[in-house]
Image 1 (cartoon, helix red, strand yellow):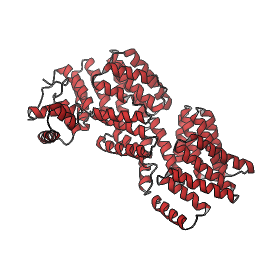
Image 2 (cartoon, helix red, strand yellow; image 1 turned 60 degrees about the horizontal axis):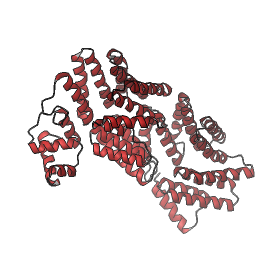
Image 3 (cartoon, helix red, strand yellow; image 1 turned 180 degrees about the vertical axis):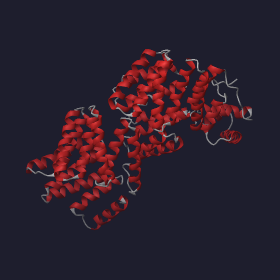
Image 4 (cartoon, one colour; image 1 turned 120 degrees about the horizontal axis):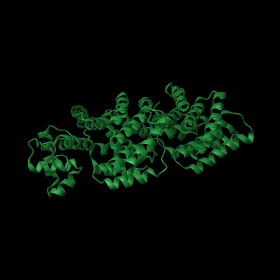
Length: 537
């Protein structure tokens, strides 16, 4: 379906002659799916009023539901509640037993979930599901099942909730539901899978969502979410350059539409910049995430740690741990806390964070969470000078992440395995582990991780001899500033030269070192001991 063409066709027909009632509903949906939510509400309001004038109570109630639906999506919850109440009242006044009654019940179920009444929400969604099944309405059944699945997962009944997700996704991928419902279910289920860090399911459904979006020209509301999810999967797979492009596009689309996912997309951008060593860009992205209501932690605290601000990192992560975050954000916060607190030598605090992460992993039982918990446990064992006890959880984490095709996470835990080997006197084993990790970090341009690894290797075997690659003293200065995340303008100011001269130096650096990006140049600088603190003379 080309939704832009559908919208234009209905708009043209409506200008010539008022559309029929069923056509108005299609017109409202087409407006919504082409990124015109305010117009969609106006069209559905018109359909509602026409239905009332003609005594079509069911259709009036149905239009009222779609208005409430669009208002919920726009976060205008008070207006949405009013339209939902009107929908229910219309049906109650005439005692109608129809499928529209189930639609009218959905906003109340969502409200209960939002208020934390998870048991009440699950029961309400189950009642809606029963109505959908009784009337054979697959749209209503699918909406109810995804809502009930989320409530069950939040209640700790993960297996039941995931089973409902799998069932509802069969209907969606088979094309058994309308486009507006398919989009809602895709985003809800994929979001829940990411929240649980069920990466396998998230990857499968994200690929399906991407195909679905591509097959429907003109579709707008779900494009940003699709790009954001794709960016996360690409990051996991180690395709960081592609992930960065997708994350940028996702943020631009979601921010322009004032979408609720803009903060998450900005945070994802920050993480990619931080991992690649583009620290100033990371700082800006975390700031934008915060502006959109998404906590910038643990990323911002880890950024502080990477720039040598250990006390600031610790203070930030301890404050963030006091926030009432749940699910994926809490798990990520705890994993970051373990890293920061171990670096700060607060081993007891790191152990508490690792224990809480283990409890979350036991509750949701997804492989990624198990790997996170095992890695944290191993890191704490190392900090407690128990390298032998660290090896089993660390190797378990590496095996899980390898199975999930997450090469950066494998490399990070491999560094810890190397530390355990070194502490046990196995210098050759440590070198093999560290060499394997270094190859991955170089391939990805993961400059901070590479710098940390070089520091470990230097401590064990002596500093790396700087290798200039034939660069001139001025080119070396420029390379060191690139490695610190400086822009061309910042380099020009630091060295009192023009930006044009900076660009020429960078071109020479890339040519001499056979590099193609700033991230690769940063990695080269750290690897070859050209940055202060990484073995530079």
